[in-house]
Length: 108
Length: 140
Image (cartoon, rainbow over all chains, first blue to last red; front, top):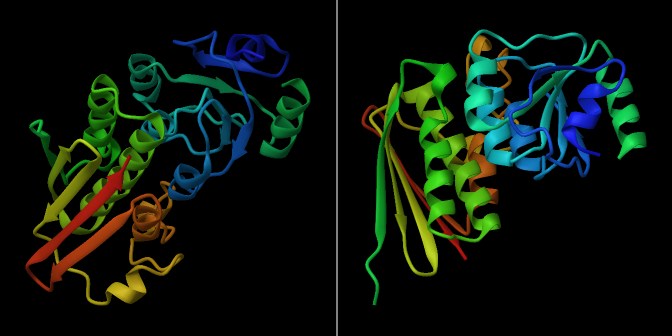
């Protein structure tokens, strides 16, 4: 499934999609950035409630396909612009991390 | 024998939200040089952790990345307080980061362990009150 296809599903809202055709090949859930950085893999959907600027750096370095902000979290000021510039997709959802992960897992 | 390529960066210690800029730039540069993807990933993760540490603990510092034919060396130097107990600092979960840093998702005590895990060699030179230099090597 591509990031665009996920963004179009009910319950998901795109924040920015500079690379919409990116294919999601798995997922990782986590909010401790160092932990995520050591474990998330390329092309995964990273589901988190963290919204600060550092998520853009972590997503870039891990090369995840998309950041999925769960629990209706919105990105902090400037995150959207940075993500856009670096080609990082961000989607948000009111779902809890568990629900979002279960749904994404069933779709890919 | 080909010449090595060097990149140098100043790590700004005053702005936590922009930490990671050097690592992101290095990732880009290494891609352009055609370095294998897994090596790039290891270098950029180790370097980012180092950058974050420099911002949290040492008011910034300098980063140098040297690309050799078969390996990449990352040298991170700061003039911070130094590491009093390296063995303790290397333990996963041990952290002296303040609460405001933890609320941003860092300070989980994974920084130095991640740097060691993702590199083939890591050397820490530290002196209390003077600073710390960490040299890491990633082979490819």
